[in-house]
Length: 132
Image 1 (cartoon, helix red, strand yellow):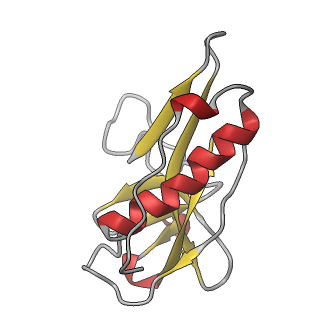
Image 2: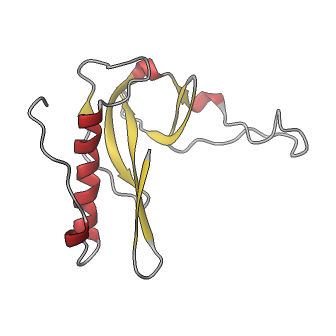
């Protein structure tokens, strides 16, 4: 899931939760049923007239969900937050639990407060939880 914050001048910051892996690589925000694609993925050459071969991401960039070691918030401007490690996977997709997702994205909201002058009155942080 992505989050956006539009500015008065039409510019925007887009934030999302990226998956992290033991080798230090992070996901680029694109996924499929088999897993997530690493940041910097490329497309295979294909025939633009054949939808079966056109626009296919090179599978060497695909990492299975079982290899996810944590999550971190990212912003389209290049900012990266602090990793939250997977302690106990909550499901086969290895997505953060809802309360974890809110806390992870609060890092992005704090980034916006620093990046956008005067933005802090508009941004709401999640309520703290006691079970993290």
